[in-house]
Amino acid sequence: MEIYGLYTVHKNEKNADGFSYPVHSHSSHEILIVTKGNCGIVIGDTEYELGKNDAALVFENEEHGLLIHEAPFEFFAVQFMPKICKNAELDALLSSLAGSFKGKNGAVLTIENAVCPTVVSCMRRICDERSDTDTDMYFTYIRAILYELCHNAVRKTGVASGHGNKKNGGTELLNSVIDYIGENLNMISDLSFIESVFHYSNSHVNRLFRDTLGISVWQYITAKKLDLAYNLIAEGYSIKTASSRCGFGDYSVFYRSFVRHFNIPPSAVKRRRAERL
Image (cartoon, rainbow, N blue to C red; front, side):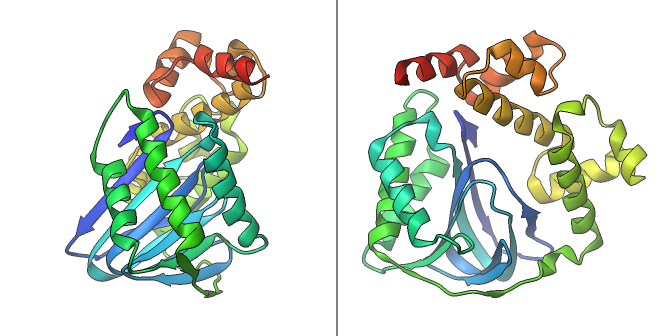
């Protein structure tokens, strides 16, 4: 589910064959909680084993990837941008976790048995209950989860990793394309760069993106552009300047895409900034 700056995933699979999320990064924080099975998560240059009742908090722009080791498995994940819902308590919880794990790769923890059902219940509601209007509900659950991670969870240790899951040729290609997109985002207007730069067909790379990330290359590019535009508007740039700097040649396309992605118009971001000043 994707709504209002939140992106959620609930995976409950009987077979782990070939299932992975290659190393990537995004401009939002992510909470992942495992309820069944066993998986490995790489954050930065450290790899952790995650099992039942384990959680990972990946901070914005941290490289991370996931590989399932044991099935059946189930996990819940939510990506969120705290600036969409400015809240002193949420900010304090994030700051506390970030401070505790300063200089480390992400926050990886085991949740205490007594509170784990509550945390899982909150994650289930975020991922499985859709409300296009009651967005405060999602952040209420996120605050509850972060509180328990701060106060009722124990840090796990990891081992040095060389991003071993990059060895697969398809994963290496996907990571290379993702890196190229990040470095040339505002200059990409179509998918011709795939063949000219990487010498693979668009259909091959699109299939790779859909199989591993669940979206097409162009959907990934558009989401990255919109995230950047949101940040620029929140920093004080005009809406048209943000649209242009993110590579949108047609303002009407930008506007419709922004509303569809965040469920609010760009002017709402500008208005919120003015209210905070």
